[in-house]
Image (cartoon, rainbow, N blue to C red; front, side, top):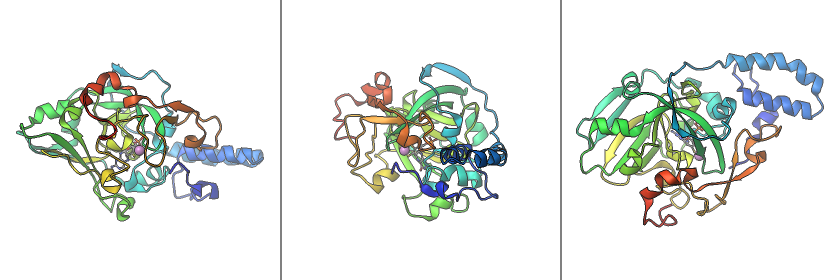
Length: 333
Ligand SMILES: Nc1nc2c(c(=O)[nH]1)N[C@H]1C(S)=C(S)[C@@H](COP(=O)(O)O)O[C@H]1N2
Ligand SMILES: [Mo]
C-alpha cells in the first residue's frame, strides 16, 4: 500500500497530451541527475518546466485566518498536497487524482441536505459558500496508511450548516455521500469500493467546531484532486473519514454504512479516530511519515521521510477526547 507506482520510472507519465504534475517532474529530474544523466536532465528542464507551469493555479478564495486552529508545524508544500492524493474515484495510485481529476466539473454543483431535519434544502454551491464566513485553518491530516500532511484549509465549521437546517430530535448521525459519475470519474467504473463513497459521523462529532466543511486550500478553491468543490476535513480521524466532492448530507437515526467499513470491517472502523495504540491489522499506527520532508528521496515521500510519533486523536485530544469518554477505543476503533 505504501509502495509508489513504478509507472513514472518507466516514463509512462510523459505523454505530451498530458499535464505532468510538478512533483512527478521534479522526481524524474532528480532521478535523471542521480543516474548521472545531469546534462540530459538540464536539457530536458525547459520542456518539463513549461508543463509544470501549464498546470496553473486555482481561483483565489479569500478567508480570515482563525488562529485558534493553527498547527505550527511546517506546512506541506502545495506541490505535495496536490499531487500525492487518495481519491479512488480517479484511480488507486497516489498520482492518479492529479492526472485524471481534470474531468471533474465542480460547477454547477448542488448539495442536498436531507433526512431528519426541519429545513431540508438543496443548496447551490454559491449559497453554501456564503452561509458563514470563510476561515483559514491549518490542520494535520493523518492517512490510515501511515503518512501525514499539514494543510491550510479554507472553510467553516459544519456546525454552522447543521444549526441552520435544524436537526430533528431523532437525528443521531450524519451521512456524507459523494459524487459517483462514471463520465467524470474513471475510477468509478472499477469496483474497488462501494460507490458512491459514503462516510459518516455521530451528531456530536459533526457538531464539533473542528469538523470543517471545506471549500479551499492554500488560498484557493479546492483543486479537483483534493475534493472540489466541497469536502469534509475531520482532523482527529484518519483521512478517509474526510469525504471529498460531497453531493448529499443526510441526517439519520442509525449509524450509516461507510465505504471503507463495508470494504473491510475489521480494518476500518466507523470511528477511526487516530490512535497510535490501536494498530491496523496489517501495520502499526504508532508512527507516521510527513509527506514532503524527504531529502532528495526521488519522490518516494512516504518511504524516505523521517518517521515521527503519531499522536492520540492526531494531536487534537484536548479538544475532542471528551466526546469518547467511557468508550472502549479498542472496541470502537
Ligand atoms: N470521495 C472520496 N473521498 C476521499 C477519498 C476517496 O477515495 N474518495 N479518500 C480519502 C483518503 S483515504 C484520504 S487520506 C483523504 C486525502 O485527502 P487529500 O488528497 O486532500 O490529502 O481523502 C479522503 N476522502
Ligand atoms: Mo487515507
